[in-house]
Image 1 (tube, rainbow, N blue to C red):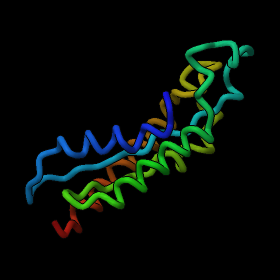
Image 2 (image 1 turned 45 degrees about the vertical axis):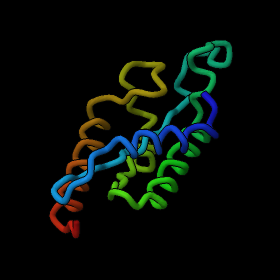
Image 3 (image 1 turned 180 degrees about the vertical axis):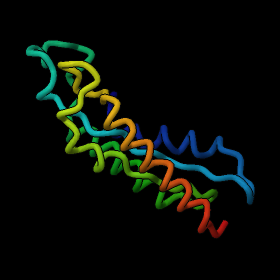
Length: 125
């Protein structure tokens, strides 16, 4: 896809969210990718050519920037990209650049749940 369209598409999703005092919304950044784990030939694979860490980072930055400017409802972002950057040694299967093994998934889930708890416990909605 075209990166420049991402903020516009995200705003369409945000406009569709109902508002209310007891609603919590979270945007979870996409996790890091590790193309060096991929089997040789990644750039010939039409489904994988765009899966680069700079592209993932750009998408996450655009999303967080869009959310900061959004005022109709509150959407908190939770950063899983940075916590997954150093997890390249735990692929789900050998050669998987995108999906993680059990150890990393447990780490990401624990962090995610702690952040949700922190944000909802101290919420000033």
